Image (cartoon, rainbow, N blue to C red; front, side, top):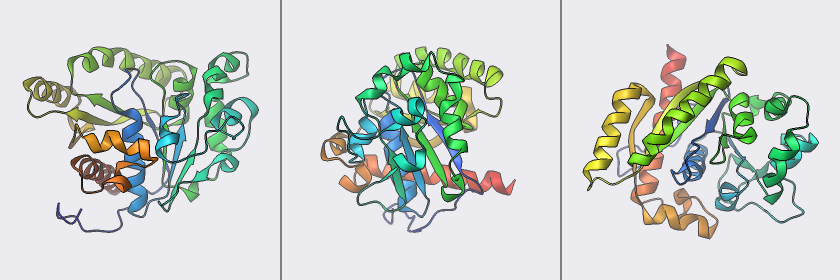
Length: 276
């Protein structure tokens, strides 16, 4: 950060806890990577952050060194068995102010089990309402790459949706369906939800296509798109195999610097909107 001219150790904290779902039904666009690294960046700069891993693959839990053994407690027990979020959140090693509610393989069957439960779309929202969120500044929900009941639970529970978009043509193709689903959830289940942030990921400046996709997204979504572009980075891909985010694995890498800048934008945007 000092190299980029931002040596400040603490960033502004929002007036109240921001609940953000990181969603895109297309796989491989960087949802989990974005969730983990934005959360780590904000926590390293004085914000209190909770990551809720709602993806049955549990990649965010792996990247944050969570216990994912068969007998460990996870977000599954919150959704299906009404266990409290507070009892499931675990501190993340080596990063103060960061907690994670992990996912285990049990979550793969949760979509089927949720079908028969009362108020199945709002199980996660009810869990959040029972949690004293004044102790937190951000809650990031890592959504699965689908538009099923788990993702709907995330959208009902949040006020903001953050969409990572890979700078490739296929990513744009699936975006329309995601936007339609966001509107459906907004009109029927959660009127307070808004798409607040769009982050362009896996940017390769050597290709014309990446620049075209970036320009098209900015032209359509305007100020919702963060100025920061996250480049393709080997270090970002390597970090989870060591049970770390890239922020601790290689903080000087291009990927780490980009995610730090993106998190800084999010923090200062919250300050500006509070000022307005």
